[in-house]
Image (cartoon, rainbow, N blue to C red):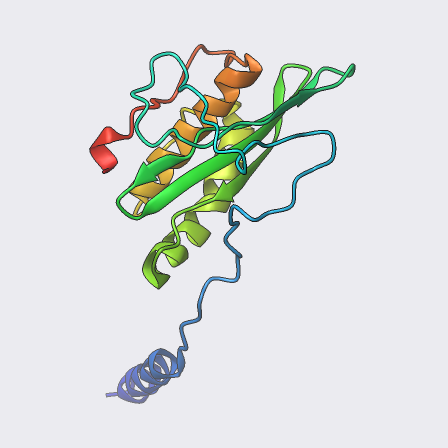
Length: 181
């Protein structure tokens, strides 16, 4: 009997906390293809040219052109092929400096509908951190974001192939996204 007031108080507090919870949308913005281009790189999207897909790639969804640049400091930047999925394309840009992946950014991710945009916004920073930590495109798939993860990894692997980067452990991500159509 002495515990009854404590249990009732805890139950009331827990119920009030649950009812007072307000969900919010993700604060991470989704990058689009209209992102600004760094100086010293060029893109031939306007000319309508296409780039051939990288070796071992199925070529599905690889119709976007790439951009690459390098400087005397050993820094190379490339944009991977746009990988098409049923929820939209994903395209990733990578910068490799002195044999290390130093920057990864999503040029475009699936955002055809609000749910896809929410999933992409959630998955992009997780994938980016994982790539920078593991120094390879072969990273774990983000739970609940399978299409985003696999197309992100495929585009990233395409970009890494363009700059000639090989992971220290020899791992590579698949560039075949035909199962995501």
